[in-house]
Length: 395
Image (cartoon, rainbow, N blue to C red):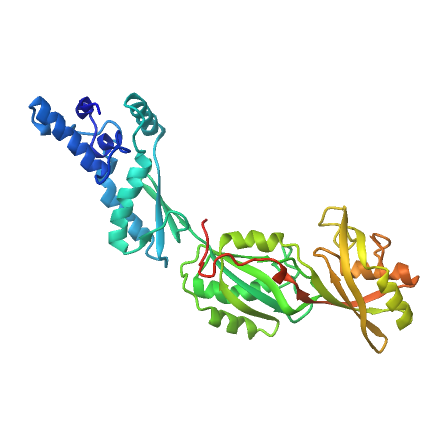
């Protein structure tokens, strides 16, 4: 160690950081003080003469650590949280001078950002009683020392559940044009927004059903994301009660979720079981025989009904089961087990030949689809949940 660094015009924090990776049990401030003491003893000088009026590197930023911590504590008062992370931004000049010092004296130092974040964090912890979390904090507090400002990054509140859509005529998510006045997302999000006092919501579903289709059976897995929530400890049973009282959507199996579960839900390739009501002048026997011929791989070009908002391309999907369940007057009820992403209505009527094979083509007769229900999502085949105790993941 070169004790001559004691003569540098640096505060104890910045002096100690030059050799911040050496030794244990000392803070950088204590290490800087110790370097000056050793130099003063060896050279028989007054230690106070080694202290500059102002630090040439940080410019006195470490003298404001308490002030920054208090400012941050005031800033987060309106938010409910258990864990935090302190981050910081420094001017290019400070970072440049720091790099030059580290390179000159061996590069065994600790960055100003790490030292600053730790020192502010210790004081913030005392002020708030909250715990630091470097991986998944409820709130990240970013201190911009260039402008003496504090920004907050609030971890979203993520709630996993399953929903059943009991009525036809409402979309899964908010309709951009405003054509539909409500959606599954808005019905579920309304009580959560009221309880969490969040600013924005987003529904992540394991696929989606048509607007005129119901989602029944074991329900569709979803994660509701609430951005910038002020309250995190929301009562899930109360949320479920309020949503279920709508008579339009039911939710169940609620729990808090983690960020990585969103990708798993959105990318899940699971089989789905449907029931579809059709009208055709074919006989039951003809329908049973024709259904056997649509089992297997099918080619589906983007349906005409959604061509205006989805890429026009051909997709290969698989039909695993197709059977006639019952006849209700003039209507036949058919049950289909299909790969995720299959268009079931088009599988029935053919969509002017854009789906091949299809039931109408095999019958040689027109098929009219009257209704469609999703009755089961076989997501038990994949592992969605990653952390039973998770209350959300990093931002």
